[in-house]
Image (cartoon, rainbow, N blue to C red; front, top):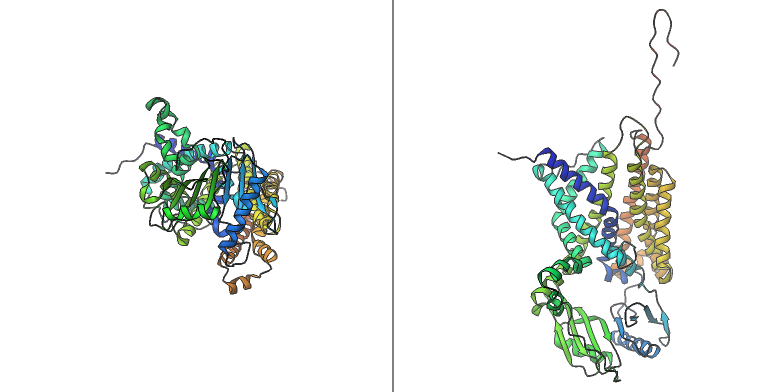
Length: 531
């Protein structure tokens, strides 16, 4: 005999699912939509330029020149981070307390430093949106961590709600005139099918964003303030040694990379962190990936920058249990433990997750519709405007970032994204929801459809030319943009149709339908008034 939940208990879980979803939904929409794109961070770096073989020797020589000139410009540098993966090396300079940050590249001649966008270009800005939603760090990251905890509560309550009919309604997608039921079915099906991945995202997101806060009870009440000392070796490759104020030249970059590769066969460093370069205790940490069949492929090698002595090596085969857990959880979150097929799976899951939060807000608005009157409550109307402004503003802003990334200098990226986002948010409050939804979806469609044209203008290579050249990154980005643009256009048309033909007593109605006046009752021989 099957046991059913008490109706009061079920209502409590339904209320919990609704309110925690609303509290975190808008923030998580941005995180999921931006996160889906950042799965292809490395590929997007090659989207703006035709495919070409890169001379590794020339790249390292340019990186060495960049490093030397930054050290000359900042003789007392404490923290530097050199990125080798892009076609043109980039170097981040931080002051001693990490309160000031500058990013440098070399000009076309390779002889002069040029300031680059502090956030690292449009790809880095999309990545930052994934864990801050555009809010200032570190508060945006902390708020996102709290949202992940609420997200986990929404998952648990959703499982409790749908457990009695889990198998029965798993593939139910009832298309018809009842649009609310169709959206409800789509919300449930996508949520249930992708449940294991959402559990991973919620758990790993909370650990990565506010892990130190989650450790606080153990630090103070269980380990008597000693926990951080215990786990500190798992958080760093080698113990940092303070500078001695004894000048010593840094070994050449090629030599440091050679010594790092000797430690782990197949190691390909993509990032070089330097602490106190120019000092006898300078510490250089090489970070990159190795082709091993492990959940985490991250390798880090710490060297003394003055002597080349190996200070520590982190590789998957020798991880400590704590480091294996943390790096494995990070790999699960970002999906960087597999090849192209896995990245596409994470991309689809990211877009599906964004749809879950968008559809959840729409279902909340529809569930609170007043069926007996045209004027709707203030709460659903406010939520409708916020949902349209934040969600569609994020989509339009990200598409605009691709255009600015192709056609403008990186320093304009933040202005472009936040300009489009806040303009969309304002438009959602100035226009009726149905009109705003229709118009903002068309904005998303137009901006997204323009991405292939922007790449054509930036590179001078047509889409057909990119196909013939085998520029696969360009082909996949352009095709994906066109498919998404078509989807946004279809949604725009559906929004307009619902506004015109849907129920009059709805937030999404464009014009209330006037009902016929009732014919007054007559007595005796009097005739009814003409209609």
